[in-house]
Length: 123
Image (cartoon, rainbow, N blue to C red; front, side, top):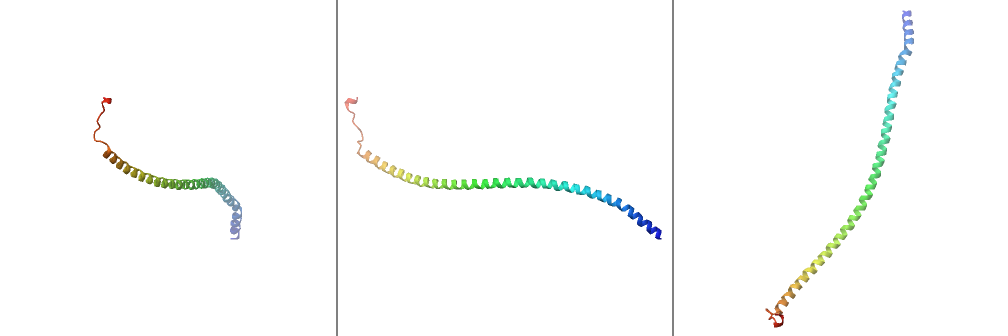
């Protein structure tokens, strides 16, 4: 029985390096695969960071342009309001002048003779 145990112990001691070498090789291959994945993810992260920074800079440019356009729009609205007021005043003056014109036409028609006699010189 001692011999069997001794042989088993010796067998275990002799096969352990071979088994660990296989596991070690598998682990190295797995580690290499993981390194490649990490490298790929790092490159993707860098690319995404660049895209993010680019979009943020474009976003700030767009915000600036929107602010400028908003100010221009407010200025144009003020001009439209001013022109609308001026237009109303001008329409009121046109209406007033139209009334005066009608009154004057009526006065002229009352004073004008109904028919003029033609002079012999014009014939």
